Image 1 (cartoon, rainbow, N blue to C red):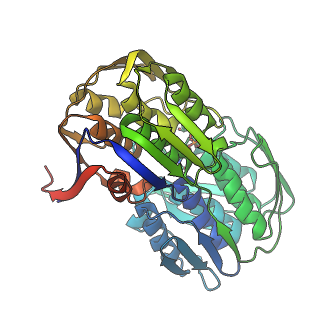
Image 2: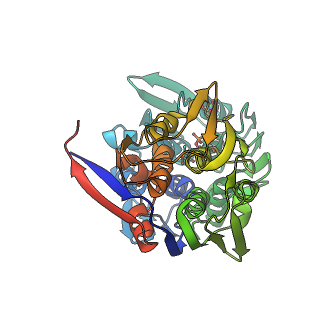
Image 3: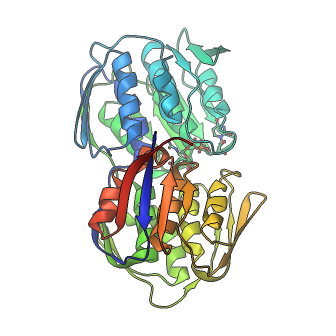
Length: 422
Ligand code: EPZ
């Protein structure tokens, strides 16, 4: 059996939606907590399946874990150096943050190769290069990495690509290394700053996060603390797109507008009417035709790769031809085939797509092939005439906190039910 979300399109949405904590910060903050020698309390945790998967891994390490709504309390005081080789590791790619955290804590870690959505080849060579630069030797056998270091010694590390994961993972090991580590060509995503804020509150010494050069002075001890997660800029962006697609007047609350500058400017270029009011954005439903635009995904603060998929669903309603070029994940176009089943007219080319609008969409059964494809299909389902059934919704539940409940509150006609696996 698997779950399906069914959406009856054509209903105008109104009201207020509150954005949850950032998934891509949360999945790094939780492993980072094991570096402390006392309890770490994190607030603003989204209710997503990735958090449950990480809690399983924490308990395998003998951490005490309490999840109460949007709060997680992790006490690593009595944790043990245990290999992470259960199936739980494969539930999410971000399990790999335990590599950096456990290497930093125990100078060794044994962990199964992580899983995650299929977005084309997703190597971790830059992570491993960073760990080796800090003094770790790495062996790989039977799908399992073993990283060991006599000592972790600070070093100068240049990232060939400004990788989010590698930047965070290297930081998690370097905070306990002896001496200074400099990460050059570091990624600048807000989620990296959030992880650095937690580490700093634990006693780490980190400078330059949010720029392309991060300097870390290793320390011997890291203590427990409290932390509030930043809002999820990708969930927020998804709801801005939903509001532009199917809203009359929607207030998207708990946003840091600066984190969404690239999307906001593109939506305005399309003709979407929005007002930024403090930590909220008010989106007014489309009165005139939407204009076609061209998108090129970039590292932060450029246009986020995670938002090109949901925006593609909206671009099917723009008059004219839009172009999306991927520079981060060249294969991130599996949503196009699903959207075309609904009546879209999208051509997929080398690391790019061409969207011919405006095309009316009609409901049918479609498949969420990955997390943000699922989001694109939700946008399309709200727009389409008739019922859209989205299968493999577990992808959506990995990264969106109660998306159906939030949409029903806005007036969407959504239901969730089980079907036999085909
Ligand atoms: C993070 O993935 C996010 N995931 C992704 O969000 C996001 O799309 C991506 O950053 C880019 O912003 C989390 O934070 C959990 P990268 P990450 O390392 O860290 C190549 C979502 O939908 N690369 O910046 O894996 C890699 O192949 C997810 O929420 C190497 O070549 O992204 C890719 O082409 C999807 N070697 C590019 O860099 C490495 O060692 C970007 O990867 C690491 C990465």
